Amino acid sequence: MSFGIANRLILLAMASGCAHWDFLTQSEHRAAAATEERKAEEERQQYVPQAADPDLHAPYNPTADHLRVAEAHLRVAHQHTQAALQEQRFEDEACASLSTQARASCPLVSGAVQTVEEIRGGVRLHLKPGSNGAELIARMRCHLAFARARGFEGLSGCPLYYRSAGVDLVGLGEVIEVRATETAAAAAIRRDAREIFASLPSP
Image (cartoon, rainbow, N blue to C red; front, side, top):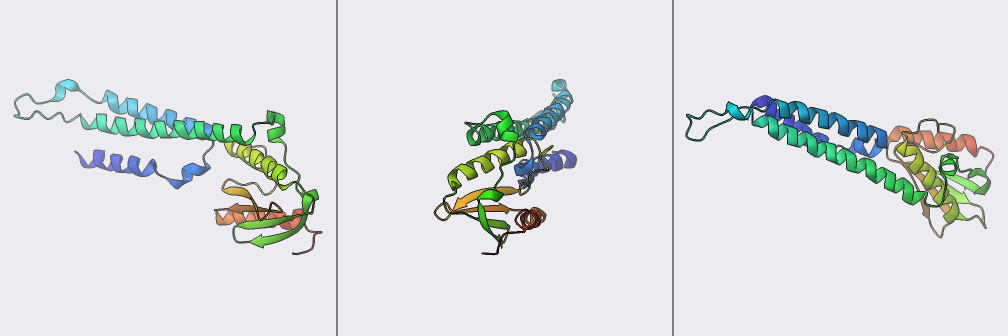
């Protein structure tokens, strides 16, 4: 196998496991799949069955490596396609009872929050007594799934939601945590929370 072909196969293997895939949208995954399929076809076209040397005891075809690279591209394309489908399923499950219009609307949480606590990764929202934490977290998860699937385009007016963010109902259902895995997103969540809940007392 040539040095160039070997390196391309290594890069493809690395790309197929990249963590940044978690933050790609459905359309980005589908576009990436299309790109990989195009690259696979370009590699396949460079394969020449008649290129093998018949005089060798074990005939070697120097273009056969292109087939291996093409197969690697197709595997990555399949992974992108499956990721896009998974994002759609996640949104459908999170928003099962809501219309597309309702999914796009920003859940208003300020009226249900009693105090806000800044934590590593984001904030902890302590709800007022009697607040329906389960219903609120369901709306938040739906909107976050909807936003992720669309790359957060046109949804900047809804604070606390970023690409690497997640929301969880903790305790006995009286606390909602909004956390992000990316440092910049976590800082933005805390900043937004300070602005939204500026009039609330500290816990």
